[in-house]
Amino acid sequence: MSEIVSTSITVQQQEAVAQTELNQILSAVRVDTPTGTVTIDFCGSGDEGSVSDVSLTGGKLTPEIEKKLEDWADRIFDLIETDWFNNDGGDGEIEVDVATGKATWEVYYYVTEREHGESGEL
Image (cartoon, rainbow, N blue to C red; front, side, top):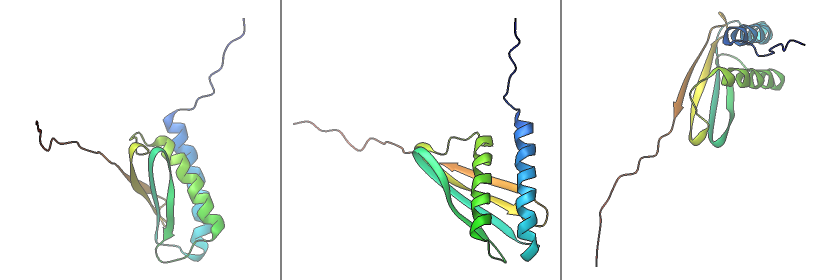
């Protein structure tokens, strides 16, 4: 009888891979801009979400680096537990300190409320 081997990785392993990828990307960014903040804005609704903007305070990103950061953000989306892209959707931003490599994120989801206005009868 053959043994089934699980190929799923833990959250800690996903975080480690994401940090390694980020460090590689930031090495290229630090050549021209050793300090600053990378901001990655994202939004979504329905059943889709994506990066809407990537910027760097104090410097400029090449299209290649922007694409790598967008791909990296997709990895972070897998770690975010808040459902920001279904139904009414949501948005957020990821900020990365270029000097330290520390990444933080804020995620918001939209809620549509329904309130009774009035009733009528003829």
